[in-house]
Length: 203
Image 1 (cartoon, rainbow, N blue to C red):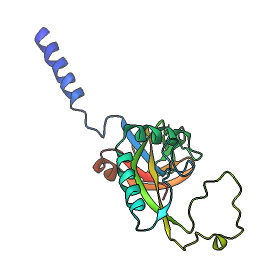
Image 2 (tube, one colour):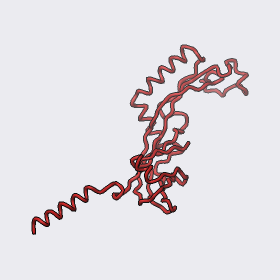
Image 3 (cartoon, rainbow, N blue to C red):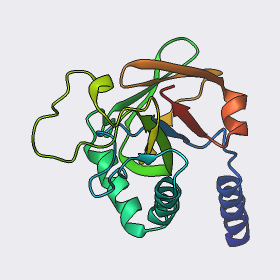
Image 4 (spheres, rainbow, N blue to C red):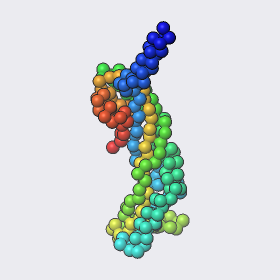
């Protein structure tokens, strides 16, 4: 009798550990990527001063930008900026509906990190106005330093990647909503192939 009981328990345990992902709880990780929009840069990571296009000053600014990207403080500044930015999605609702339109799962974007931190170059028509006095020209063309797109400056930006997890009921297909906005549809097979992780963008 003991042998039969032990055999039965062993069989049940084997069956438990052999449960396939389709029979287990379906947990979908959703990442939502939004371009950093907290002003033009993160606190403590300023844009460089403008320089004449093609000048040594402009070349030095680009080298400085490359060095700034390597600093741990830059990553820290952008992580904080993603949490504070005006269009933050931190805490936003994730809703997933089934093939029938019923709610298959609810969750929230619970964390955010800065990704793809980068620098880029923009142009200006005049030198920087560093004086505390009001800019004295009504039109840029009246500024004696005016050169159309003759100056460049380096600025920094990043993507804010928000993440959250949703436990789903099984369905043949799913539609994902972020903060009320409708996102893409996925079949069950597509999510299996993606290992139950999707990366969405506001673009």
